[in-house]
Amino acid sequence: MKILAIETATEACSAALNIDGAIIQRYQLAPREHSRLILPMMDELLKEAGISLNQLDTLAFGRGPGSFTGLRIAAGVIQGTALGADLPVVPVSTLAALAQGAIERYSFDTVFAALDARMGEIYWGVFERNNKNLVELVEEEVVSNAEHVGFPDRSRGAGVGSGWKEYDKELRKHLGERVVEVDGSCFPNAGNIAILAVDGFERKLAVAAEAAIPVYLRDNVAKKSVVE
Image (cartoon, rainbow, N blue to C red; front, side, top):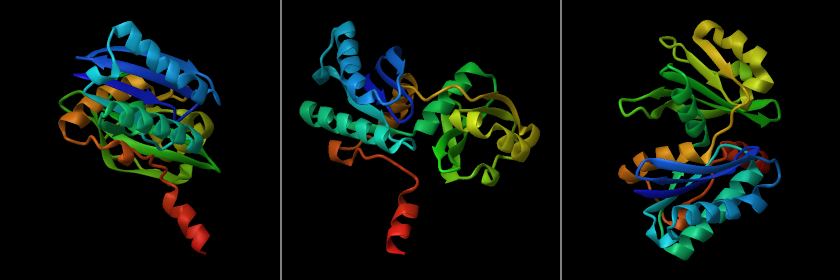
């Protein structure tokens, strides 16, 4: 299977090519540079692999949650590419990609992934390793302040993402000893989007280009505020 994936939901910008499990990636920590970097990254990967877009099985992108601007960039690029090449798209959670990277680094089976959502809040989700060595979401992804997070009582695991960098004290106080290892400096990347996209494609989660839309988590809150 051949998948080209992109991820621009955070300060990190990346693209990755997954060819039958072998992954090559371009990654750069470059806030506000994503729109300039992402297309050249994609082109470089295809040239390095010696393949064209029409030889791919699908595209994939980090669908959020994350930066509004970053998510719009990813959705716009992936929709345009998919339409031009007549390819389906697998949307992949940025929190899941963050968690997937963690289970590959640590021996824990449970990961608390958290991204700084600004406005005093974090995007977060709890993920567990399945029998395919991939992460699965426990319950749902949430946006809330750090004092309103949850974690399975039965589990101990790792905490990863920028939410831990900004709210380490609050999260540790609330979660106690259930989170053993913490890395607040890591970001989701397209390599892990590409890994999770294989499973998503096999589970028939691919969508048409026009249905490849971001997930903001704050949508309902924003709509409610406008109505009121």
